Length: 146
View 1: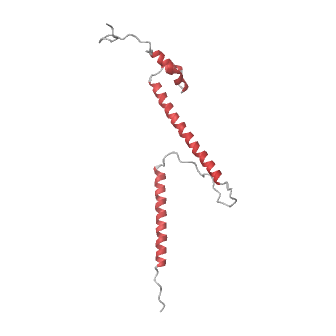
View 2 (view 1 turned 90 degrees about the vertical axis):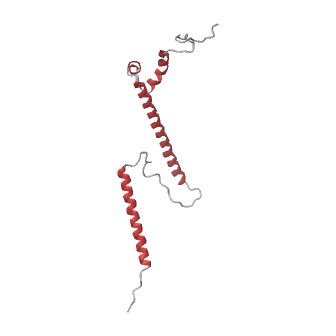
View 3 (view 1 turned 120 degrees about the vertical axis):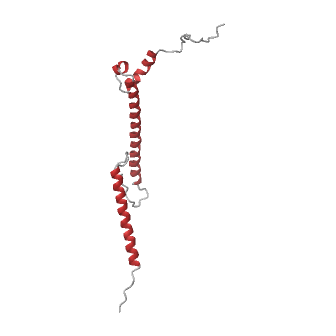
């Protein structure tokens, strides 16, 4: 009785659901062309090129997504600034200006971090000196005449 089992060492008969490697390559070929891979690169080039093109495309999509997200933040900031300057109550309000510099999208360099730390230290020293001067002035001993 044939139950469809394949004995060890036997090759299973081809099923109608199996497809050839050629069919699989033909199916994905348009996608690789769409991301910039040429016909010759796909069919005759190094097989790892397809991997590199796919990874490059993923990086490109991530970068594009980041750009679109950042564009949304700039649009939000512009609309928020414009709406905050509309005063329907007729009173005078402080005018809000749009940002003076762009959003920072990369980490600060070591030099920038050191410069910020030096500036923060200088600011703290100035504040402490001002506090000391105010304390000294408040606790100055009166001079006795005589």
